[in-house]
Each structure stands twice: as structure tokens, then as C-alpha cells.
Image (tube, rainbow, N blue to C red; front, side, top):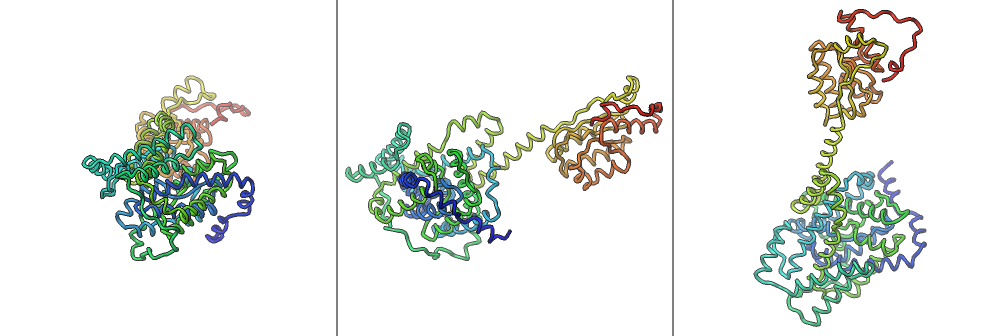
Length: 571
């Protein structure tokens, strides 16, 4: 299938239009509610990104509308988010606002490419402890980013959030601004306490309106407003694009695209879990987010993702189709065109309070406690991902979490693999014959996967075998074998053969023959007639070998027509 055909399949369908007619009144009301919640968040995240409140509004309008139309979820609400802000701050410091816009455009192209490559399905392989640790780390970073505005001090220089927060605290200690602190804490308290009692009331916008009114009419010193906002969206432009700088921006663009994919698909999965009968298309979601991130920078917007908090509000207020998320973008556009002068008076401290409350809400204490109690490995992954998010970079944090989770998972799987010495099957041997066989033959049963994480342990155990003439490897319970495991097995056979010990194998599955044959392991067994379908056959072959070597007396011929025992038929 060509890339063009694949992208054509990701475009909106007739069923999307049919869904808009199910309950339009409820969707319109849900969209209005989400817009009220999203307004202070868009402003706050725009300010935190370093491009200003107008960039946050442009992102919420443009990206929110396009992701609603072209995305893969009926309930997803997209726009600027705290996680993306965390990534953008160092990009602004290093490359400036134009660099952020170029990074957003490049990230959008990468997301469309991921959609064409059907990469959306791989989101399911991100472990829960990585997601929880990632979310906890983001919440801490968002809260620390708000300290300068919440304390009413100018934002100190620096890329690392811990350094900036410490400098802000030192500046506040020298020149305290209690007005800003009071506004920020009041807004955060109203949002957190009010939501517990009346969860459907949009306390964020109510608290911001109240804080703005108090700051205006009381003439509070230290309540710095957002500042002038343009009455409308700027004309689309590519003036920010510097082709000579694209090479240096590729790495940040990959990081932004990875974060946008991760957060958007996670948010869409959360929306599915909150409803019955709703399932998102991960590839369409990547496609929609890609188009949104291509368009948003043209209007001065920052990179966008699916927003978990706004999506949750959308679901809880009864949304059933993408009409609600599109309505949210339209309402925000109306606000941009009609209420920009009023919005510009909102104190920065009030927006800081909104984001502080948002950071607190992101932390699910119950989920963290359950994850920490599950296993030590889960707790370690969670803590490591959270610390890496706070101290390093969000994408690096996810990569570190995935690598550690993979290593611990391999370790757990490797522990399941066992090499046990098992007694020989009696078959139709007498007790005396069995004793003679046991003096010269040892049987090992391999259970579980024989792969690189566990294979060398088998080599050490098997290589220590001594004082026997024949080793039988029972392999019917080997669940999987890779090239490393096959090479180790070959090495074991060669070492034992050099010591005069014959190695026989039984129960090799058909699916494992290819890898054993590719490294030459079967070549050591098959030509010498040392591979058998069942363990009793291998024991008979071992006895024949011992008889030929003069170590066992010949066994009397069996009576013709004797029926094989049940043991001889088993593996």
C-alpha cells in the first residue's frame, strides 16, 4: 500500500458526520464548558512556554479545531499542555521563538509520517509505571515553572527548572511580593476545594475572573497583568522558517513529535476508558495531531497535543462526538476576537495559580501508591522516570524508563528459565538395569525461554557435568530460543564432546529447528543420530551407545509384538 493511499484512508469519513447528529445540543454545551476551562490553561501554558499568552490562544484555536476534525478520537480535546511547555522552555532559550515555531512544524510532519507508517499501535507497549512516573515528573516541573509568576518576581535566566525555581525563591526572599502569592494561592485553593464539592462547576475561570476583578478594583500592587493581546489571529506566515537552521532543530523536533504522540495517544486511551463503546484510531490520531502541529506555527502557535485534563472535562460533561471539541475551539476563537482587552488584564499570578492546581490534579495518589506497592521493579521504574523527567528531559525520561523496564522484564523472564536434572524414566527397565543406566547417563530438562538473558547460566551449569558418559537434553518445554541460546547450546555440546561425553537431545520443536540449524547446533546431533523425538527413544539410544562402548551388557531381545509402554510414547 502506497503512502498516499494510506493517508487517504486517514481522512474523515461519513460516519464521523453521522455521529455529529446524535446529540448536538449536549455536544455544544460540553464544548462551551471545555472552552471555559481551557481559556486560563491556554493563556497560562502560552506564558510558561516563553512565547506569550497569545501563542497559547492561537494553539488552542487552530490545533484544537484541526485535531477535532482530523483526529482519531471523538472525544479528544487538543491544545497547549504542560508537558509540551516543559520541552519548549529550553528550545526557546537556545533557538528563540522562531525556533519553537519551526520545531512545531517539523514535529507535525514527523507525526504525519508516523501515522502513514502505522506507528500508533506501539503506544500499548509503554508500561504503566513509566506513564505514572512521567506524569508525576511533569506535574512537579509544571509546579516549579509557576514559581516566578506565583511569587511575583521576574523570571530568572536558566534552562533547568530546578535552577530557575531556586533563583526565583532567592529573589522573592530579597523582595517579597505577597500580593502575587495571595492571588496564586487563592486561585489554586478555590479550584482544588471547589472541585471536590462541585466537580462540574468551572472554578478555574471563576477564580481567574474574581482575581482579575480584585486586582483591578482594589488597585493591588504587584499583580502584573498578562499585557496587550492582539484582537484576532495573525495571518498565516512562514517567515519564521530559516532553512539553514533546520539541521540543528531536527533533534528537538523529534523530541516534540515523540512527546506529542505519547501524550495524545495516552489521552485518547483515557477517554476510551471513561466511556462505553468509544474506541480511538491511534493512527488517525497521530495524523490529526500532525496536521494540527503543521498549522499552529503558521499562526504563531506552539506545538500541541491531546490534553488529558480538558478531554476528561469533555467526557464528564456528556460529549459524544467531535462536535464538542470543535465547538471548544470556536468559542476560544470568539473570545480572541471579542474579549482580548479584558483577557489582557488577567494577573499572571492568577494564571500561575491555575497551573499550580492543574499540577496537583495531575498526581493520582491512589495510582502512585498502588504502583509503588505492586513490585519493587514497578516502584523503581516509576521513581526513576519521575526523577529523570524533573532533572533531565521528558523524552530522555521516557526512554530511560522504557530501557529500565525492558531490562527488568528480561531479568524476570530469564529467572523463569530453569535447568533441572531429572531422573531417568524407568520404562520397562528392571531396577538393576536402571541403576546401571543412572551411573552413566544424566538427563536435564530445560524449562522456559533459552535466550540471551538466560543462556549463559545454562552454559555454566551444563559445562560442570562430569563422571557420566551420556547427557540427554529434554527440550520439549523450551518456550523460545534465540541465536544466543542456540550458540550457547552448540558450545555446550562441543565442550562436552571434547571431554568424551556424548550429548543427545529429545523433543526439539519444529519452530526451534531453524535457529538451531542456522548456527550449526543441529549439525552436531543429527548426523550422529543423537536427536530423538521422545525421551524414551533417547534413553534407548544412550543404552545402545553404552553397549557399543562395552560399558553395559547387551540387553536381551524383546519378544516380537510387545506393546510399547506409556512412558515410551511420552516425551
